[in-house]
Image (cartoon, one colour):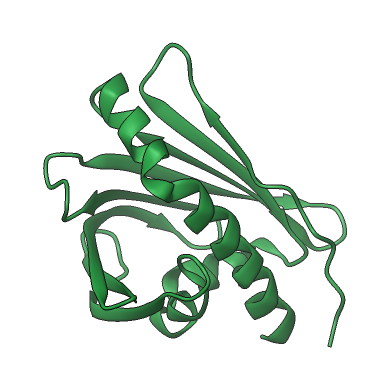
Amino acid sequence: MSTTTKHETQIVSDPDVPMVRIVREFDAPPAKVFRAHTDPDLVRQWNGPRGHEMRIDSWDCRTGGSYRYVHLAGGEEYAFRGCFHELRQDELIVQTFTWEGMPDGVALEKMVFEELPGGRCRLTATSLVDTFEGRDAFVASGMEVGVVEGYERLDEVLSEA
């Protein structure tokens, strides 16, 4: 079992564009972090806040594919879906993301996996929506808790895999 350093998750709302940028470093190479974002068995283990169970209804992770998953917590279901627009092995994922509770709020997400010295990875994810109100609702929805706890869970998955 390897030891991991606790890394800060930076979440920044852009003042000029309705976009959120998330930056996080991982003590694993880009190939391993990328796989944890594309392999449904691994995604299920870390995506979302602690205490939420995840059910994947569909997962066609390829350029032109799509996905739908549901987080279950306290008897409630929160469904998310989107399309994979571009995947470049160990480097890039471009996808759409929609919470079905707000079906008009489609975000365009870009995740860049950057190699760092020492076999580490920096993940920079940007989520662009169509309005500042939509972006602010996205941030206020509890997204920060899900992202921070999800990445802490991802650290655990990466240390075991």
